[in-house]
Length: 233
Image (cartoon, rainbow, N blue to C red):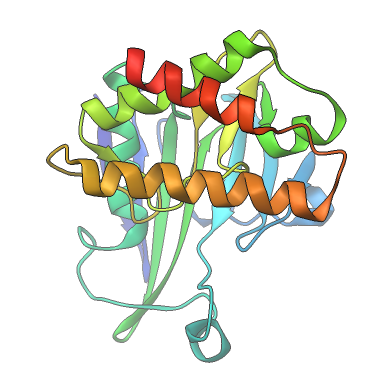
């Protein structure tokens, strides 16, 4: 069955028909007051449950200077080019291809003239952000190498992550890593330039956490172990 699309008024929906039979605005209209839990960030994540499972809702919001004027609105009239549609389809491709990403469940675009607002729902992972874990404990040498191998597997398949940072890497309760938040991510021809830029972005993220908290468990040795795993895979 796979990807299905539907519409209700100004709301357009994309969803996995193998998981849910139909969606409407109610599937996306959750807030902190009725959530199981929340996660803060530029786009607050709302965790909620239905009979189909446990899910994560993320509302798209702008960052930087444009956020002062547009906040959660984006320019565009094509569903295919909307951030929600693009991320949903990329995640679906990666998930079905066996890469460790959250399973995409549904997306919504609400149009208003030349602007739109958007939301994405994915299946909730039994995992926590790497950054959060490293504030409380360390991970093994082998796991740093495994993280490097995980990133390399994405890169070798030409998958570019637009914001590879320590909060967009999830570590599962039984070990192993996931990458999340593929907004503006895309498939590219493998090239050292963007691959190294991805790694540099992650390094800056880890360094920033370490500068702001001396108890953050990250060292030069850990980075070397990550790179060893990346290069050996």
